[in-house]
Amino acid sequence: MTEDVLQGGAKKETADKLTSYVERVERMLDEIDQLKDGLKDLKAEIKADGFNIKAVDRVVAIRRSKGAADKEAEFINDVLLYAHVTGTPLDVVAGDMSEES
Image 1: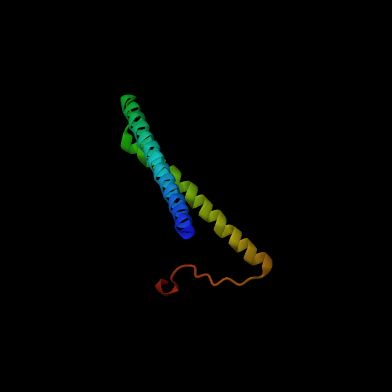
Image 2 (image 1 turned 90 degrees about the vertical axis):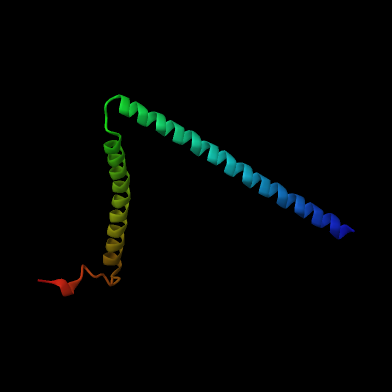
């Protein structure tokens, strides 16, 4: 009997946790929908001001990817500097050497 009560409490706790997760997902999806609506309104405003939406989207994509490329270049630079300072050999191939002309 005591075992049934303990299992019932564990099941209740598990159900409450799952319900909490589901509610959080629902709230986040609602927030995403609101953001999408806001983005749609912003693009309508951009278009109303005479700008090309595709061009603006492309500029945003370039700016976002540039940040990632800058971070990658900084990381590679850090690795190379670390290797130089510590004397760690790096097995780096700079391009395919068989295609030299």
